[in-house]
Image (cartoon, rainbow, N blue to C red):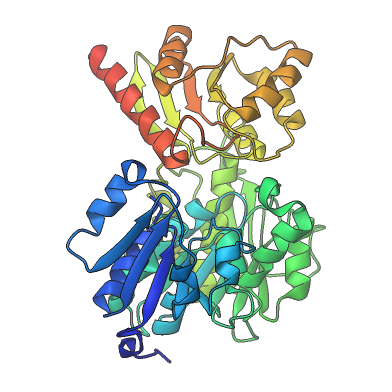
Length: 475
């Protein structure tokens, strides 16, 4: 049952962390328009936060920038926490009550939810679900970790408007104990080590992911990855009905009677075409066609996870297959930028962990010039270094992660030049190396901080430099 927004009128609220991704902006705007007395505080100064500050112009908001003041937390009726703020912050410990933009949305909406989490693939999966819902004629919405706060469209939601929420581990951890998240369909994409500099262990990291199904019951569905032990663990714990998705048919992989979707080679094709099928009805159904617009087997598996979730939500298989065929992909996830002198340029800046860069390298049969490296998240680079031997050339960006990666590349006989201090320099080096038929991919395998504001800024700078190169060469 949706709460009445009048409950916010006159409330003293501190928004901790304005940020640049939209969550802090949306929270401050939503609360100010609801009549709350809003203070926004951020350790960064106005020179960094200018775009966010401009988005809040003409609203009655008090700003405290470059610092936090304890009184803003002690005397607030509640504090809205940015997901990246650590939960043991002394300022948060002083707060009477803590909310997030996600918890506020869940308190004030009665829309049916499809929630998606995981380490990699969650943006593609959630975006593909949203794409298909819209193709099916449903007035759906997409928000969460994908940089659109659901508070932006809260007022437009009804019991007949499905909402797809992409949720990070931090966002899920912030919901623990609230009892607010009860998705009709929960999807868990591939789990790999990530944010271990924040969590310290895989178990702690994955425990936050488990929040996605803790509020579900037998009226709901949990969609699990059959190729991972993590997926089997989630399936054993959820109180919802389980559906699976897998990179091969279920026989020998899952017990008889398992339902969901799988990938298999097309026996009628002479090429390496792969189809996605499901077993929801008596006969198997085509869910993902052989030809899709997003490269790589990992992307096809993400589409399959989306298709299984959509089928659980009640969308017909034929509608799903048509939507998967024309799904254009997501910015910063193997996003095709340009073709310059018969060289393909791809932006995979959202690849912030080694496994994502490995998947990018395996997505192409052509020679790959790889732009990688950046700041460290306590990742294990051993496997990535071995896979980098497949690349035609490695161009590195400066950062603490690069400093750890380079000795491993040396051990595998991979020569690298001094790391680049800008995206302009990296793109120029890639352009000098690549020849007709090659692929240039920005797929860092590291975080972006240091040279860039965040991974989206890194991808935007790459796109800008590639388009400048295209214009210079008349392409």
